[in-house]
Length: 111
Length: 113
Image (cartoon, rainbow over all chains, first blue to last red; front, side, top):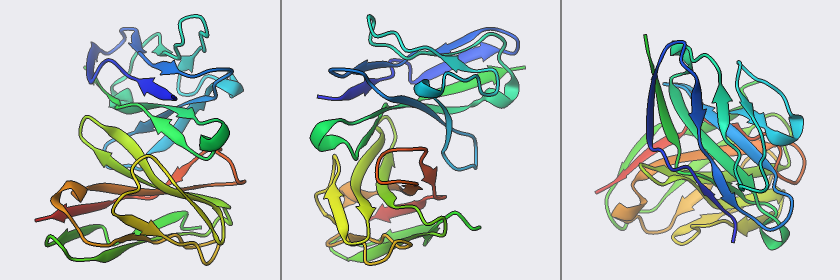
């Protein structure tokens, strides 16, 4: 079964410190993974997707099939990065139309 | 473009009442979906649609009905509200018939007493 696990409910770092938000997944085959972000009083929005291999707002995420992980990283956190972050996995086969979200990690960046 | 719009923003229902949450998009997206967001549970897919006249169940469909008579609209109906349906509901849409970048609405906060 497809599943996404975000082990940290809350994560706090100081401004300028590196940050890593963990995401592990359960999937057979080649997964398609996303990171979504919800800033305070804003809509949920796509941050990045692994097939794009891009860096958005200084964030990167690398797919590690061996560890079944898709951790989100940023070398120097900023206060404006404070938000709720969700990792999401696209379904396959009979669940191709589904997107499975993790429980989310609330990131707080202190000044 | 307004993007994805949802009405109402807030709603309080009594147990057993029914209501419809409205969702509309003006981006001509084929794919639309409904999620509920609960503390500690993340977002869970209720129903989705890959085009007008086509709907399918998500992870937590019980107690909810949907229909898709037009490309633009995807209403979510609560048949007989229960306290367990207290949640924030998000509608989302994306281009194509599969999962691409999802554009989310602002959400509807529903309380069932």
